[in-house]
Length: 268
Ligand code: ARG
Image (cartoon, rainbow, N blue to C red; front, side, top):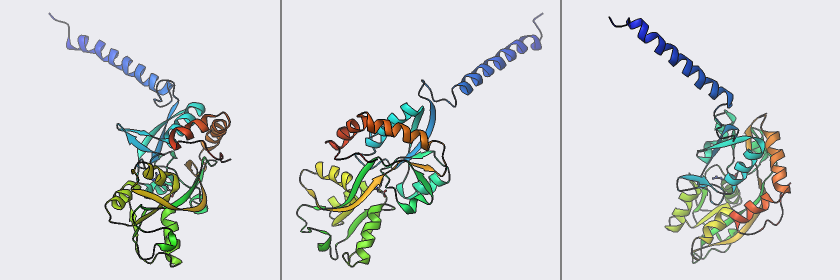
């Protein structure tokens, strides 16, 4: 006679149970599957449509912010897992702990600081007025009833609304979900100008073959920070790694790679 069913199945069962324990043991030991010694996975949200800070190349996020945070992660012992998120909802999502970190060329503002925490500043920026080179608009004071595009939820939108309140813009301030949508509308002639972060609009000018130009730098002195939910225990470690990166020449390397020149000054 053959062995009883029980006799054949039980050893298999024991083997399977042992295997699953081994697998579980491995996962636990690596602290949540950081993998390859890269440390713990950390979920990072960004609006990945903001070159040269974050954009997609061959399906992968690349840019200044990505290089900077990857380097910070190496030094602080975590591995960023990037999630593409609309900028407008990004602060809400962070304050609800939907992700651990935001890096998205985000300006540190007192309003935002009420809801989230920021790292030390990592980039000095200003706003800018971007127009078609043949458009006949030479400054904010010449906007009149032009339609001005902005990305929704940004400091560019805030600036444009300030100009509207001051009567410098009498036309529409039109919001777009991404700055790339706004650039497309400008290139199609649907809008006549864009108010947006200088380094990003400059990048668009560089790729426009002379079709676009920045006619005014709007000096806001804003600074970008990496953002966390309130009281995150990551903030200190990130600041420490960031300080080293600014100090040892790595910051300058990343800056040159993505901005195309050395930084005038490194924010402290
Ligand atoms: N610096 C501006 C702000 O904080 C614009 C940031 C937009 N970032 C992005 N990835 N779309 O409002």
